[in-house]
Length: 141
Image (cartoon, rainbow, N blue to C red):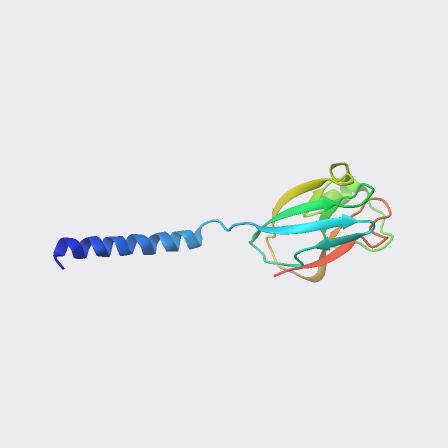
């Protein structure tokens, strides 16, 4: 092998290694999370999330009435709070007028810090729905 061939091989190897390192450091692909809302329940394809990972929520209302989607800390049963206050507390939400029967909405969200089991949930706070059981506990590592 001559000097020119050795240099070309070394340069090519270095460029391949550099591109692999840069691709590993690049933005992460979002993880798709399928969420189904019904009367009166919530199902999610993921219950354990990782801080710093982007998530693409696909939320489908398979129920016969409007629902909403909120990621937030659990609220105490009977706790009186306006929807504006709940919206401010929520990490992410889709309002009930966007989740009519049969509708699907998407939401992109990245958790920024860990949250132990039971400290966050996916919930519907449309009047009476949360009390009827529309909550799904999640964990963020």
